[in-house]
Length: 256
Image (cartoon, rainbow, N blue to C red; front, side, top):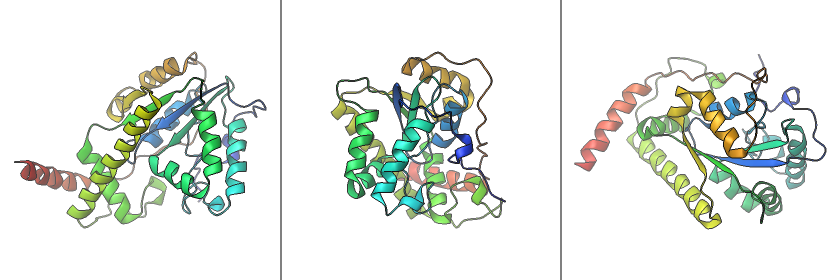
């Protein structure tokens, strides 16, 4: 059975021929809950649909355009119209590695993206989502990297057991730290203080987190019916808790 990813045309807003009036970059790193929060923001109907429109990885939403810079450019210009909420807001979720890949494969598109999302002389808005529980984040990242299962719909066995790997966990934690450092350098270079939010707070009160973003972007927070967006289902835990306990012990041992 086909599973909706959120990138299908049936989820588009009515076309906006003039493009966005306000934009914000939704910056995050892997396994920080960004997919869940992007759908929370999208569901409000007033904060665009901040998905990964620059994800051209072969297994990604726009993998069919992986080897076509021209098609990537066309897709970008298309989403600027059809993923702009009726109040003129457009959001873009992105990870540092996607910007790096674009700089290598399609620098012309990167330049156009940055001119829209972070305009010189214009308002620059960045929402930065992080996760306090670094152990849980590293465990999630490592297990997904090993299994290749990044979403609920990819699961074939809810009780899947994965052999513990200290090496994979340490690599995952280094990768998270590196990508966070990339964002920090970028924020400093641009002289931007982003709106910083935490995954745990979003889970505790998603509506309050969305309100913070609306206030930051400068739009009225809609109180009307929620927009119909695909459900984000939580992945099965499997033996992740055992991994977390073991990894937490190893970190304590190494620091003592």
